[in-house]
Amino acid sequence: MTKQYDRAYFDRWYRNRTTRVNTHAEVRRKVSLAVASAEYFLRRQVRTVLDVGCGEGAWLPHLRALRPRVKYLGFDSSEYVVGRFGKSRNIHQASFGDLPSLKLGVYDLVICSDVMHYVPDAELRAGVRALADATDGVAYFEVLTKEDDIMGDLDGFLRRPAAFYRQLFMGAKMTFAGPYLWLSPAFAGAVAEMEAFR
Image (cartoon, rainbow, N blue to C red; front, side):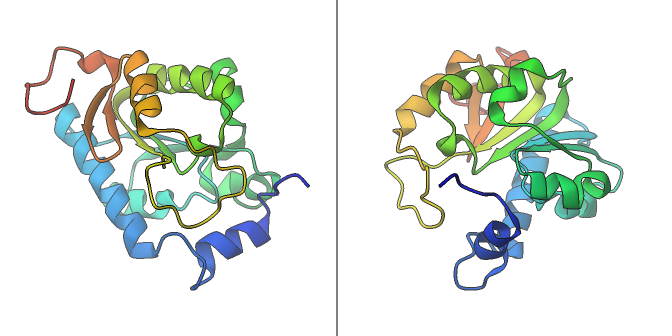
């Protein structure tokens, strides 16, 4: 049976107190980290955000609380999500594999949280290149690896080593800058030695 990202899926993993993967406060901390890091490197406030595999747009209320005028664009493969939240949260239907064919533009902050470890290799490689091209500041790539102690949705989870993702992101000319944080290729050579890991 094909995995369904329907209302029941989001109820189970994002709202049910015993099975949810993140609390409201945990999401707020991630958003705060990503926004502060992007603004540190950009040296100005975040204005534009791209959220790939955004689900119901859980990051959006937190982003708006921090930056009320931020322009947000979300993509998700779920028909349920787009039908219910598409217009109100600016979420459009697309899979990770669709990214290279979309005219994404560029964004101060690019988010891809809890998605890549479900994406097959060929789609992942092409999609990451598209995300690197769309990143004008910082990307927050929250990805779980085979070395991690994982709780939550393991259906379709691809147990790749952390080294695989590091090589993939570095191959897209991105620079590691902290917890799940990757700098745009535009920052190559423009950061101090101790600001990022090369």
